[in-house]
Amino acid sequence: MDRISRCSHGVEGVRFGVLRIRSLLFADDVVLLASSARDLQRSLDLFAAACEAAGMKISTSKSEAMVLNRKKVECLLRVKEEILPQVEEFKYLRVLFTSRRSTGGSVRYPQ
Image (cartoon, rainbow, N blue to C red; front, side, top):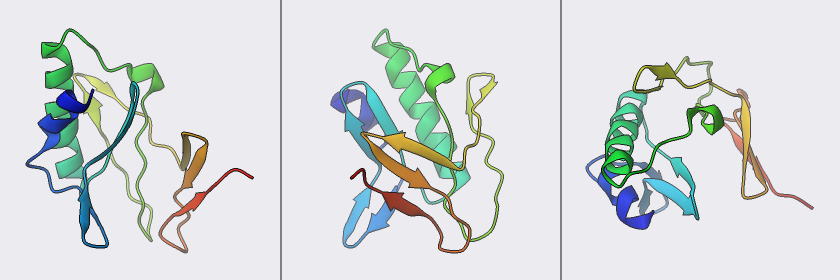
């Protein structure tokens, strides 16, 4: 999966301090990160192509899009012809990510 995720290089990702983060990986779970919808779609296209070349497929029934922004923004991401549902929150490795409008987003850790 790490080798496949390298395909998104060329997309800047998001800045976290001095680091640029393009993806979060754990086993077969992947989170792609980008600072714009255009970059995220490009990263998703590259990732999907690399998966296909490796004989794998993105499970669109388990995939979602989320925007962290102070105002509501629609983000229509596609895997081939399927549009991914946009959500207000999602859980990744027991960490809840939310797109609260007043704060620009938050992360809640389990107790």
